[in-house]
Image (cartoon, rainbow, N blue to C red):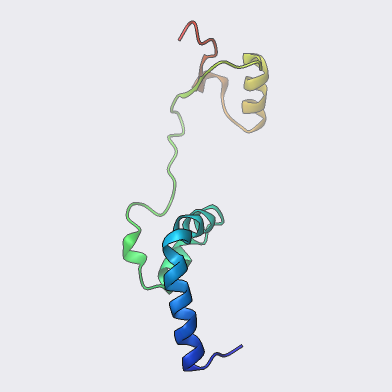
Length: 99
């Protein structure tokens, strides 16, 4: 579909009116689907993304699990092992009273 200049102008007005109320939801969806950088590139606003492009994880860092939990520590460690994490990386504080 190709719009005329009048239709584009009307569409622009409608978008500008709705954007303040919708922008956060749009950004969240783009971020969640991995398309935020692409959208910002299309808008010529890629300079607004600061920081590194990739997530960095410390391969040997501690993973701390905090909070009241009905799931036992052994079960959580089993899930972690299934996903390739070493047991030694985890520290658990599952009792609010102990915290």
